[in-house]
Image 1 (cartoon, rainbow, N blue to C red):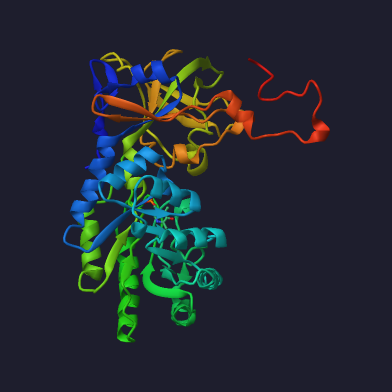
Image 2 (cartoon, helix red, strand yellow; image 1 turned 180 degrees about the horizontal axis):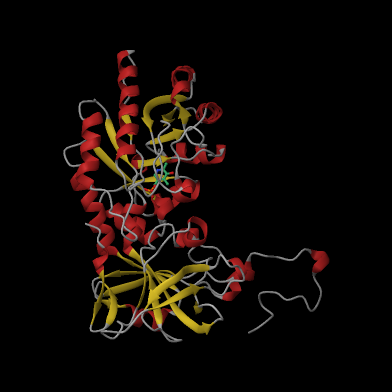
Length: 435
Ligand SMILES: *Cc1c(COP(=O)(O)O)cnc(C)c1O
């Protein structure tokens, strides 16, 4: 299972598998992300095992972490891919995911993206509106083909998760409302470029309570049965992703119980089943390592100012997410704890990783690990404040490899040509400026 035990103290130093994180900090500099390939593989294996006996394809949702080495690790185990952009589709293909295991999701696919998916020969497009379905039909026709299509249903279920990652309620932008499904199915059957093959749901992310899944799966299966009764036998049901992980005290949903809900809803149906876990496969397999730059004693609070910032990891600012933060050097036994705010260097109060967190005494120069950052971490990073993206390192046993390098400063200027009217002899360019 995906307990965070892969990151453990040994001889007083936090390790990723068999590699001391302090050694990686010496060579790669900070901040950096570190992923455990063993943990990713373990989480994938657990999902596959729970679903064993079902005609299941596990399509890893790349948006959680689309690092090529991460996707490749899963592809080598047989995973398919759930992609939401042409970029993600290209990463999945480059990682060796077979095209016929790629599902293309998302409410706003462009015609170019549709064409690229059709040319690649992907398994299916999950469409989320009638206008999108019409566009897909036109694009497919223009290429002399039909688009394998599933309709994403909005089952109007509250996933009981953070508002910004809840996607299955009627007021959310996702999917086609149940009430509109008969018309949508009719339209799909009429459109010459659409080959209707399935139904899909995805009700949200970081679900820790399984009950909403039960309701959504039953609604989806009910719809499938209705269509079967009307002589429309669809080939596939896609149950989406959303399985939560333990960041703090939450218990990750029990995979066996999840699989039982799937079996209850769909085991008797003549349909292939698709699952799209993202966070569950990678979330606890990553840490963000950062160095304390300064310890600042304010009038009311003590601040640890670290060299990672909200541009590297936006989840605390964006979702009020709680991440475990621990020192990389094991605290002395019996060391007391004191409340600190752990903040980045960016000039926004939102650039805060934790408030009034109890930590053993930490001094400037020490390393901290921000845990459970393998999902929606590096992929959501930006260069805000003209900061370079943090590198990513993958560990496997005693081995490690940089799987995304820290860009050099020239890269920040490389794609920003000046218009002629702003050029003069002293204009700074990538080749001038600081050497
Ligand atoms: C985001 C997303 C996923 C993955 O969600 P997780 O919570 O990371 O498992 C799966 N399917 C779709 C359609 C998504 O948008």
